[in-house]
Length: 259
Image (cartoon, rainbow, N blue to C red; front, side, top):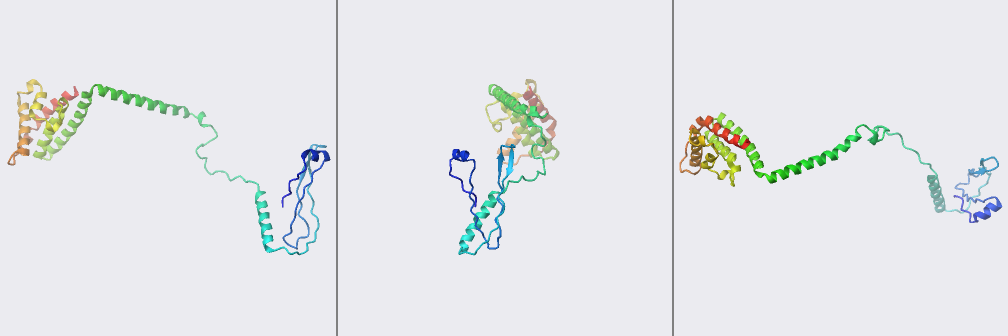
């Protein structure tokens, strides 16, 4: 077992000039013939160094006694715990990869570190630009409505072109009417589907309201209304022949949105 702590005050030990250590040795077998050496060292002030004061091995003779197996197990467990506590820590092996550092140079001394300061600055700049844009559209909402209508009009014109290539007169007529409705919707407090041909004509230039462009608008609205609400099945085939005229009308409406 480990040596017990001496209860003598340190002043007395210093006065007498020596300290006493008591070790309790319990043999685990009668085959042992000597005590194990007890390592010890002490500082010698005479030559300013440590002296090896290891207690040498002492020959002994062990006589079998009446120790029970349970006592032997307790002693063996205590010896194992002492051995485990005396094991010195061992460093693990070197890492196979450099990890996140990739070198011994501190992060703040690397060339790309100053660029990290641009990240919060860019975020603040983007937030300021977004808020400025939001305030602008709050002050001038008609600009935002016209931009949305312009994007919707260009989508409808692409659909109109596909319907014309497919020779689908019904889809061509419906898409043409929808394109005119979304193009003039920003100028009315109403949904695009609620607008009629007269609303579209009011947005055309004055010289266009009495030329074939106005007749083209009326034909498209009247024919699609007849198909949707009429008792019979109206034909829209001849509206495909008005593709140049309807494109001219949509050009005028798109120019008005862009202006």
